[in-house]
Image 1: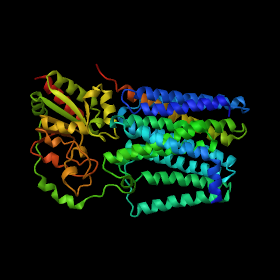
Image 2: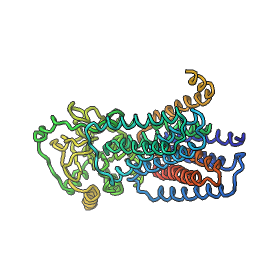
Image 3: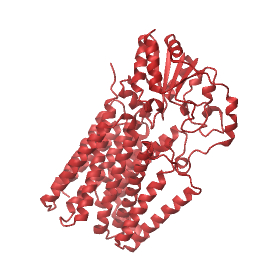
Image 4: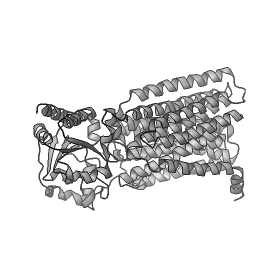
Length: 459
Length: 102
């Protein structure tokens, strides 16, 4: 490797660290992303041109073609996708990265698996790459709704773990014996791919962001392993950064949902039979209309809006901004309360609201907004459910008991917009809906908010 | 045991880098506001596309007659760059929305 290339890799590595660091602060995030992207471009160009190999022109042409095709495709997908579809897109891109690592391993195994060290890196690269590839595709399918069924087979986890153990045994056998048998190699590949599917398939929709983050971390580890194989520092450090950052992000997400990583992976919510009988004792539901809600909000001085995924599904992020502006014009103090896991992944709601130009300063995080509910005249809950369920505070038998929630019940009036009385992701009743201060505004979020806006305009 | 000791001897630099980078990754992410989790995940995802460097190396080392290696390498480059370009582009698109209104 030329000295120049080493320096290029060093610069790229530094940009990764700086970029990732800047991505963590709202003011510098955009620059951080650009810095890391620049470093990546530098590393790619350097890899292509700064080497001392004799490479025929046709190879350069092929590399150029591959980069051109992939860049155009990636750019188009990134520009075209709707912001509500962000989680599945991240998952899809992540799957591509995993597939890339897997393919590299396949090529290198037939050429370079000469010693134990190399064989180990190649074999683990193939397995991890394959798992992230198929797992990410399943996560993508589940999030965009094309894969619905949650598989429930007794002893599913044991079968799963046994299967994974089998894959590991095969891998160890291949490394230890050093056999270059293509049949075993493709068996290993198939094993990794199948395990990726088995691993993600039973995990429920609400836990999907955690899984995506975990798979993201795995892709980083696959990249790092490939870096060890080539003794390539930029791949090694870049991969490890993503790997460790991804694990931390996964844990942070789990904490926000009051779930342990193990419970996400090994068991979906257990349906609590004890809680079922209580439903009837919860009281009655009070339903309201757009005009009544409009009057209530018109004369309020403090309104807090709690947006949830229902808002995103209905594409109502622009209407809610219109509602907010209208209220502000009428002298109402409006804020948004953002639960850490509102939307489909942490921060997703912020992106959606930012898309419709909602002022960043109006988005208040949970810890800061919770004390303010006492002063709120009206809280408007749009398409959120589990994040405002008081059972998290006062029902130890509830599966979400202990999850931090938004204390909307402290407000004077609560208006909940929901399509129907169906339970939320966690599949549990919400006693907030039966609260005497609560009125339900049934309907699709967009339709209901549009009606609300036109009622307010007439006042 | 001997194998392990030789392994450590031969790869001590890599081990250092591995451990230190892990800490850097953890420290950098630890105190990030929830607002930025989605863009951050997307940005980190783009970074994991660094695997494309390996894909390019596969192509550079491939024998022009070895069609299997060339095909797999080609696919690996396409998928890797998709991850990189798509990932950074979509992160940029997201972050652009976080403009402060005056």
